[in-house]
Structures are given as structure tokens and as C-alpha cells.
Image 1 (cartoon, rainbow, N blue to C red):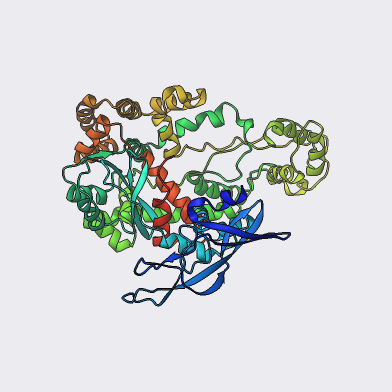
Image 2 (image 1 turned 30 degrees about the vertical axis):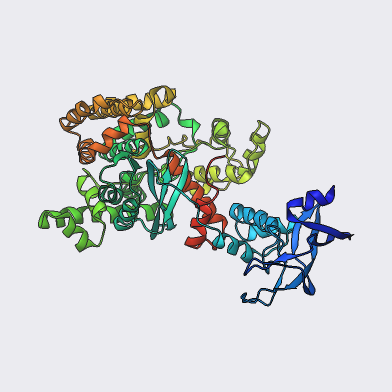
Length: 577
């Protein structure tokens, strides 16, 4: 029974002996045939010349390594016209000529190589009793035949990074079969167009809105319908909304008003003031320190080093803003400004379109473990307990689980607002009067954060987000129009209602919102692909998934992902089961 399982009858082999040790099994085999056929002329011969042995490795059995000891006979070839005088008998599909592994073992190791790569595959093979080196597994990938792939009807095209920001390739996916059909080491127009010309018959091409792929598809497959990806359309809309909101500082401030007005004790106060207040704070501090009329107990602390550095950065940014405005008035060209000041044209455009110097968002005031105990701390501080360790011990009894250092940092901020002679007392006198807890500064929302209030579906907004959006609309009437136009576009794209596109484009052109008008102009230039996006169900979702798979394979190869290896692994065994 074991012989039939290990060596089926069609192989024509028999087992002579089996030897078992603690970790391995050795099987002596030989051919059951009396004669053999010459591989050169095909004539059978039974005249024996000599006998030798081969020791190939086979698949493991019950956790034991298996080694074959094959008795090979060499025969005379009696055909005078044959170039061979002698020949060795063959073992059919079990063992190739001069191979040191059986075909079935090589097939299993090749499967592991495609799935895991070199080093990871080596570790698994060695653990399973199929010892092999990582380099041999990589050679198995390289020597594997190219998979046969027919020309697809619907293709998705996207780029992938060989070296992020420097070198990019292209992946082409059969969207109907849900498998890659090819991987190119370039994303140039010429390379993609050449591939499309070599594969005629493509009817639909799904792509993002990159100019290179638009031109490549137009040249390589002019008869194919191009489909713009709907996710990228919505992403481009959000980018336009970000540009729009960056010029609406009052709306961004209105979105954040609830943070400082309704519940100021819910957040830990930021010791650094906002950019717009830094210079004024410095001047006020100097004026107060030079005045003898202000009581010492009410003195305002000087700026910290971090605050001074932030004020200096603000001044440099303001100076650059004014310089860009001056150079542009003199030259009238954004390209000339970018070349003269050695900055990007995108930055120049952003500065010129802004009504005032753009500021970096300060970030949100976030809650901490100390936030629920701020009221209790303030009461103890007002009662005269200014020792951080004692404050920490007190609020621990109320359930505080944070470190003493968190309380100490809060106390250090409060201590700076005390007169010098009172700052380092463990316990203050009975008539001690501390200044009230300062209200955290109003931190405007970033344009990116505010844009999500518009592009999210209204049912997905929580109550705070709905109130923030309503305050933005009340602060600026154009925000209400932008919200209406954006939601019209989303309700057109998501359910794919093509008949609304022309009317929406006309409405945006008369809206007097430059960012959305620019977005609409971009859609107009790629109008046929946008229409197809609203007409067909195809998208880049499957293509993006294959790009993620490619990235996973590339990163798992530990620097051994040369293009030929990477391409073989991406294309092979990629069809869904």
C-alpha cells in the first residue's frame, strides 16, 4: 500500500528497502522494467553497461526528511546511427535528469517561494523538512514560465512606487477577472501606450485623473472608453474645498468657538498662545514689566523660549508673504516669483490667493487624564495648596490614575502666574488669592478638518459636527453655497446620476467660488471620462487593492525585490480561487 502511494504504477518503480532514523527516512528504489529506451534515437535496449546511484531529496513523510537512493542502470545503445554509445535510464515525471530534488518536491518549494519569497520561504521549508536555501527559492521564481494571460476587455491602470517620490512603475489589472495582467517598470506615456498598442481589443480603461495616463490611453487605445475613478473625483472635490476654506478664516474660527465658550474646563490649557497673539503678548509683557504702577502680584510672565521661537517664525512667514506680494506686483508672473525666490509655484499661488499671511494650524486642544480633575485642582490651588506632590496625592483619592509629572506640569504653569516670593511655598497663607484659571485660546479648525464636515454624509455627522458646520455657514454666506454645491456633486457621483452633470457644471461657473470653478474646469477638460464614471460601474477599487498587494510583496522581500522577481510574484498565482 505504501509503495502505491509513494510511487504510483505509471512510474514503473519499485521499493527495494526502507531505512528509518530519528529524523530521516531513506528509500532505495529501482526501475521495474527489464529494458530502457535511448533518449536520442528512441530504440529500446536491455544490454547492461553499468550501475550507479543517485540520492535526490523527496517530499517529507510524517515529519521526517525523505531521501531516495535510486539505482540507475546504464545501457548500451545498439543503434549504429545513434550518436550515443550508452545511456542512463530515466525515472519519468518523478526525477529530472541530473536533478537533486524530485519534481513534486520542487513544485511544493516553488509554491512556497511565490507565496513567501526567499528568506521567509527558506525558514518554512526547513521547518517542514524540505531544506533549501533562500537563493534557490528565488531562482525557482525566476525560472518559472510566464503565466499565459489573454488580452482583457476592461483594464484598470495605476502607478506604484519603486522608490517613493523618485521612481514609479505601472500595474495593469483585468477588472473582470480581478487579477493583474502585467507590471511595467515605468509610468511614462510611451511605455503605457506601447503596451496598449500591443494588446488590441481593450474596450474600457479605468484610471485616475493623472495627465500621463490620460495621454497614454488616448494614444495606445483611442477606441476604448476611459472611465475616471469616482473616489478620485470626490477626493478632488475635497481638495477644492480645502483651498476654499483656507481663505475663510472667520468660518474656521466659528467652527472652533464651542471649545472655549461652552466648556473651558474640559481641556488642559495650552501654555503657548496662538500665532496671531504672540507678538501682541510679547509687547504687553514688556510694557507691564517696565511699568511701576502694576502690582507685582498681577505681573504677566515673559514669553518662554518656545513662544519666542514661534513668534520669530511668524515674523519670518509674514516677511515672506509681503516679499511675494511685492515681487509679484513688480513682475506680474508667478513663475518669475518662484524662480526669483526659489520656492514652488504652488506656494506662490497659495500666498497670492490668501487675503493675509497663511498660518499653520496650531492643532487641537486635546483632553488628558487630568481634564476631569481640573476643577478640583483649581479649588485646592485657590485654597492655598500649591505643592504638586500634595495635589497629586489628593486627586488620586478621587480616582486620578495619571502620573505625578502630569500634575507637576500643570502646577508649574500656574506657579508662573504667582509673585516670585510666593511661587515655591509648600503652603500659602490664609489670605492667599490666586489668579483665576485662564481660558484656553481659541484654536481655529484647519481647512482640512473643516472640509470633512462638508464631504461626509449628513447622517454620519454627530451633533458637535453639525453645530460646527452650522456656525461656519452663519459666519460666511459663501460657505452655505459651497456646502450646497458639494453635496449636489456627491449625490450625483455616488448613485451615478449622469443627467445632472451639465446642470451642476453651469451652476458652479456662476457661483463666484474660484476653488470650485477651478475644479469644474478640470472636470470639463476630462468630461468624457467623467461622464463614463457616472455611466459605468467600473472603478479603481480592484486596481488599488492589487497595488496594495504589490506593496506587501515588495516590502516582504527584504531588499531582494528586483523588478523581475517582483513582477513574477505579482503576476503568478494571482487569479481568484
